[in-house]
Image (cartoon, rainbow, N blue to C red; front, side):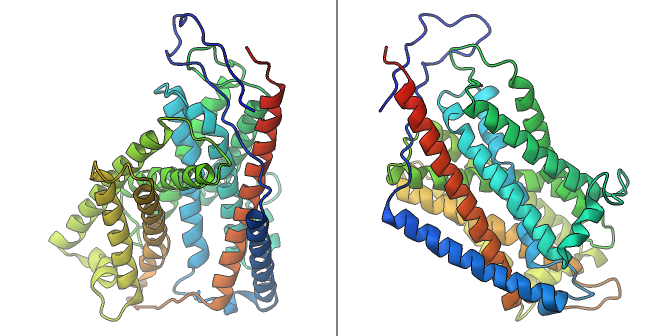
Length: 416
């Protein structure tokens, strides 16, 4: 049932002009296809749990990591998911800074995606530690956090605070707090949380970039451009995943996407992709125009013969370049299948480039000049798929809860 909202006769001073807002109609997930997908995800999560149990028994020897390459598939997924967690920042900025009508209707979806990404990122950190009880060493007031000297401590604190702030903001909105600035007075009790979430959303990926860039022994990471690159790729992949979710939910009639949301997210994605490609091109120029000893890692990454990572990074750049070309074509990007394809290529390309394409080559060569190798084992792949399945289940259940909440709210809204 659609709830009709009476338009305000005039826009009071100090508020963003725009039409009256209608709550986005959600439809609960009841189809057998959805239940079947949830069952398959549950089986995948159980399979991943079995792989993690094997890792607990035998230790990290069942992974492809070694003394030379101490980070692998787990940390690669962690860096990507921290960027996805900042996806809600895109919606908040467009709704409350640029006063975009309709964007505030899908903020809760962005917060759900951010919470899921934060939880998955923490799960990958636990998996990378080997033994889960070691995590207490990094928790404030419980273990020796080495705060504020340790950048890892800053990363954990900012990530946890961002998750808590996003949860509080989403709860406030579900309880009836109106954050919209479109033709109405915003909820001033919730507005401070908007600023906190914006600040923490920008901080989580900046601190993650500093965690890598503060390693002078790793010349591939030791760059001031790493932080803006991370933010640009985070906004690109975050907007891309939001576009995929909105297109999928709208096609399955689970959610009506407000007009103007998809074009706005498309512009965010293409501008972020252009910035990401520009920063990567600048890094490429600095590394190879006058090669130095610091260019050895990039030389191995981009031009090594018979190297899996050379093919990997070239495929990542190709995905992002093709997605950018599709989005720049004015007669093509408005077609929803093409838009879904471009968003998918963006997410895959950023995941490949920011994950294994950045983490593992940073350890090559070693400080002793050795060229170590790394390949994810089946146990790592198994645990990774299990964590992604857990995240997909949590996001699906949160979307279902939002559907029921919005359906109840629409039925209780009086007609005018």
